[in-house]
Image: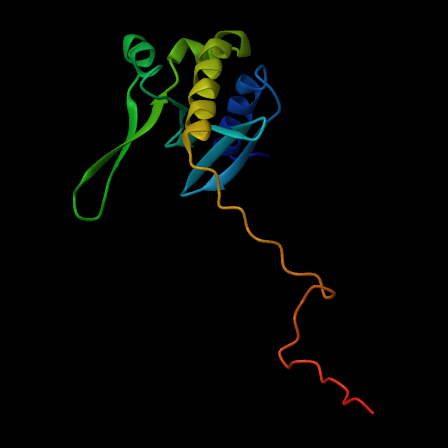
Length: 141
């Protein structure tokens, strides 16, 4: 029998599945949710939080959602760019789809704004590698 948190994760994956292939990964005592390999949501304390940004946050605020936050060891409150999915969206994939699309758009914008990783220089092929000791030249005869 599945644990209650596993049932909730499965439910959330089904809700987000209307957007594309969804998968979960355990992280930090919760789960990260990916759709088409984009990290678009997280589950913490039995709540589904969807990725937001400046373009989408107002829609979540208008729906009465709240952001995911936590308190650090030194008492600082950290607010993340993930907001709780509206309660009615938790009822069906069709109701979740517009919210999942907002989360995907936010995730894609975030990915596009990141600097590309530095291109690593491929190691030299053996035929191109230089020897540490110079080649000996034959003396003329």
